[in-house]
Length: 186
Image (tube, rainbow, N blue to C red; front, side):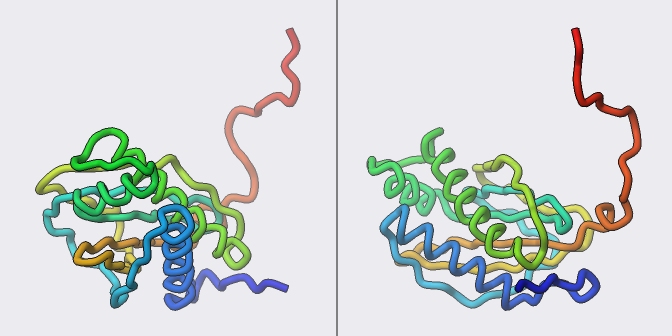
């Protein structure tokens, strides 16, 4: 029997951290044949500082909503692509960005699956990948991100998730607007 999370109390951070670590380690060992070392977890709530590298974002939607992301240096992204695609890459290109998006999709998808028994069904958006120098990412509102860093040698990657109860889903019990016919006849 599964127990639902009380939206007023929120999801225990340790449960979220455990889901992120398990999903990330599983994807890296199974799909990339790479072993990561987990780092010290922290919560990010401050205004973002400019950064450089690769960030891949995926939205979560359902009775709980939020985002998940993977952030790493260009060098780490190249290592991800080289391991996933079994081809040596030396610089960021479309294949590298696609590989980072796919790894993010696998990790956040596994986190979503691990949490669905407690939070209810959720859907994932298509990953969005940002690459460059001196850019910022931020979420609207005053949300906290649970950040779980991982090391691969000297390179660092952060997997982070921000998730909160969907207030609109709790309020909305009926659908409004134009009805959609069940059968369209010609």
